Image (cartoon, rainbow, N blue to C red; front, side, top):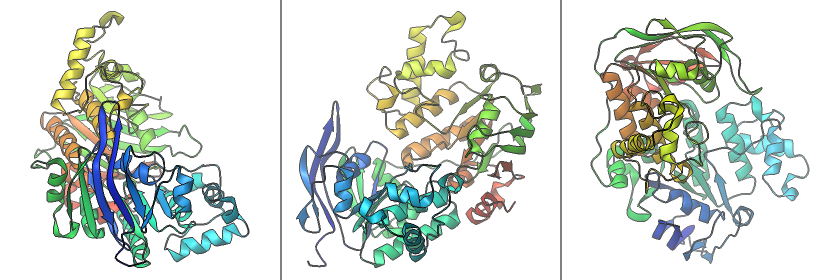
Length: 500
């Protein structure tokens, strides 16, 4: 086979769903031994396309060619057998099982025979992804869990590896190690199809890029010859204006948490251990942290979803330590948890109905327990209009929206209630550059108007862009904050690993 033969050829792929054309005549090549970026806004068609490459669904028309031969996988097992692996953004691992057991569940039984522990250890060391095959996955860090996923994929010797948002939960140090691994795979002649919204990483890592917009290919480029802004503007088709932190002096204390202690709900989770946190009017406090270090527990404690084991929370001078989530919201404390679908929004309810989850009191959508349908729909429509949510109507179920559009909706639902304190976890996780810029701008404007904003995020670039002060959460403890203009990704990365 000629070295010039593409590893993967995507030929005029078309895929439609009721009312939506996900992929419209999509064509591009992925070269052998190249890292090829697939870029686009949420809803641009990336996920649908890679699901067809991985055998999760089939195209309506068009086709795929792998190493010069027609490629028509009917299920992921067939794709893997022909040399295509995939590492998903959301890991599919069993916490109670060991590393080796999780690897065994994802490979053919014949490959799991013999000294699997030894082969897992050897393969992980070979590719710079050290793992103890006997450790329980529930005891691993997020970065180590990703290594398990990658090692499991490498067990079947893939020619093409699809990676979906692989760095969204990693520290800068873990990202650097991952890039070494990916570069080694490329040097071995393997090809990687790389999906990411972190455009500076794409510029540093990828050889070529294909840009999708509205289900169509709108361009190809060498990312190294572009800027992050020019890539984003190709994706959205318009000029992008980034957000910047509000230029304000430290205002009055609006939220003060002292010595918060709260056990995790999960046996594999992390609770809070004497957490102190202060949020001031007109300021954004960024809280950095690798996933799984107590962020969810912190959000539950601040928003009143769970009662504290000990400690106190004061909102605008009033002790709310024992106040319900509803009472805290009435007093001006609003928030967005990390999980969009199922926590921030009910999948089967319409967008209008989802506004009732948090806006019924502050927007008077259901006074005296009677729902006001017209006001509810009007509020939902205002969110859609002001935050650019792409949806046929406010009667559309939340589950039908792309991740980025749902995130814009749930953030907009809270911001338009004009909270005095806003706590948001992973505000732009997995969303495209355009949606991320819009959400960050809304957070900055909220702070500029006098609110105190607490942003919990794994995206260090995001925190350094919009925060006035930053701290880090590690194993349930929060470091002292430092001014954002004195921080750097490297320093924050060390703080996220416990070097306060």
